[in-house]
Amino acid sequence: MEPWTSGRTLIRLWWLWLFAAVIIVWLANGTSLDIWLADRAFDMHQHAFTLKHSVLLETVMHGYAKIILSIFWVLLVLIAFVPPEKLPVHFSASTRYALRWVTALALVNAVVVSCLKHQMPHACPWDITRYGGASPWVPTFSSHPAMQAGHCFPAGHATSGVWLSALCLLWLPQEPRKALLVAVAGLAVGFMLGWAQQIRGAHFLSHTLTSLWLMCSWLLIVFTFSKSRIS
Image (cartoon, rainbow, N blue to C red; front, side):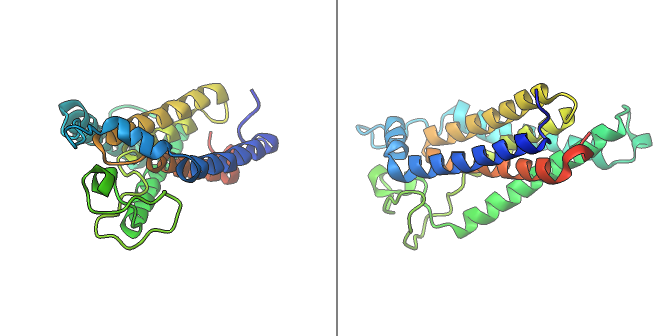
């Protein structure tokens, strides 16, 4: 498999990144997929997102998952930055270096998404009139009126898990196939957490996909400008 840091592979990845952006915008504004999926989660007879307070979705996949993944991030920070002689287990210098990137990217992604959420007027599904709220529905990438609810884009909870995709740096550049599998698995975790929120009525699909796309952006920047230094 061609190394991810080779010029040709990086060009392909950037083109794929741009293509993914176009697809996300098209799905959000050119189709009714966001609303269609939200309709599937919304019970028109009970006029509610019946799984909003599901133990699995709210307590486990939202509450416990965030706590567990946050603890895991803290452990990686300790491994990456605590002097090696003070750690109970030995980690190579290259592993510690890669983990510094991993933990930094996780933090960058969380901060950027949080800042965007506080600036964006996008309403959550449960806040729009179609589902019993008071805000109008507007396609994700269209101009939004000022709304009291809002602050629901991009998906915040997906960032709790999507940063795991950065663990692929531990296998680069020596084992690109394993790195690819880890990256995909990390994105899948983020998507799964975002999907749980969609079923609860907290987000539209485009909110989740945008959060995943942003994480891919940071990874691509690292692939492009770090190259062989991640090893």
